[in-house]
Every structure is written in C-alpha cells, then in structure tokens.
Image 1: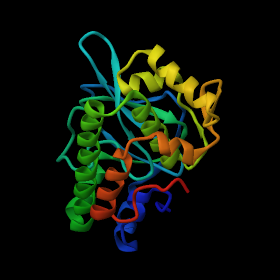
Image 2 (image 1 turned 180 degrees about the horizontal axis):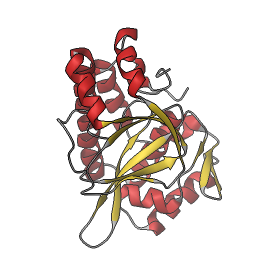
Image 3 (image 1 turned 90 degrees about the vertical axis):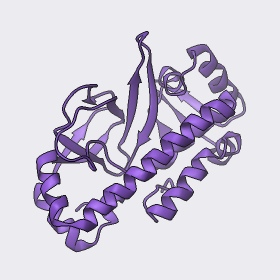
Image 4 (image 1 turned 135 degrees about the vertical axis):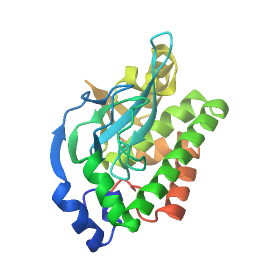
Length: 237
C-alpha cells in the first residue's frame, strides 16, 4: 500500500508504516470539489495512479483560472502547515480516480514522530512552488499553442493515459484565455493528426508531436523534481 502514490512511495518502509494506519482510500469523480476557498483543510489527499486534481483561483470578476495540476507525484492539503488552515484556492478532480486521504490532525502527529516524513513534504512544497513560478513565467513568455501543448503533456504524463478528460472550456480556463482561442489551437492540433476530440475530453494520437509543440517548461519542472525528489515526477508510464 501507498506505492500507488509516487510521493508516498518515495518514503522508506518504516515511514510508510507510520502513515498506513491513518490512511483511508476514496474514489473521487471528475468535477468533484475537494476544497473551496476559505474552507478549513481537514484532510490531505494523495492522488493514486491516474487520478488528477487541479487548483483553481477565483478572480474578482467571477472567472476561474486553473493554475496547477497535481497527480500521483504530489498531494493536496496542508501537508507542510502546522494544524488546520483555510484553503486559498478551490481544488477539484480533473481525472477521476483513487486517492489516499489522511486527516490533518493525524498527519500532524505523524510528522512530529518522523523528521523524514516532514522533510519529504517540505521538499515537495518546494517543487510545487517551482511549478507555480514556472507557470507564471510561461504565461508571460510563450505562445498560446506552446502553453496548450504544455498543459496537455502535463496531463498525459500524470495520468499515464492517452485519453485526457479535459474539455476545451477547461483548457481555456487553465490557460486564462477565451474559449475561442483554445478551440482554434485544439482544431489545429486535430488537423495535424496530433489529437482527436471526444465528448468530455480528447485522445492524444501523437504524443511526440504534441511534445514538439510544447514549450520547455514541463521539462524544467521535471528537472527540479528530479533534483529535489528524484523519481517522483511521472513519466507517463
């Protein structure tokens, strides 16, 4: 148990044994909300296998911008904070799947017992911040096509599947652009035989072709993961 999460799998057997009694398993459907802004974080969630979640920032005008994906390389919740704290962004499930769940109280107790667990989660927080920083730079520097390919490749790597449960509306929201812009890029990829659109998502027909259209931001994030948490970042397997 726990190896289905790359992050938890990075722990030694001794540390996993400390967590195991407090971990429960749950299945969350696509679109299901995990946290709302301001809600006290009472549980931490660890995506397993192909499960994929996203963080969404609520703007003053009511728009929702998706900022960060979290797959089996990471976790959602106050894994490095002390005690219960309010959530800043909404988080929800993009690709349905199984999760491990642990209460914030139990997690805090385990971290007090194990410096190794505490340090692992602190290093993951560093990787998460690197991902956010890179996303900000990407939005300022790269074309819509490069950014769209980047997000699709990130989903591809994290789920390990060629079918991505991401609609054009979700892609537009994640990139902070109008749906018409996202639709043009999707149609371009489709016309070039890179993807195939389906109800509620799309299928990647040519992964290498998609990667050739993406900027190098995913690779930079992966390199940081490999430096800080070697072997945790998914490779799409």
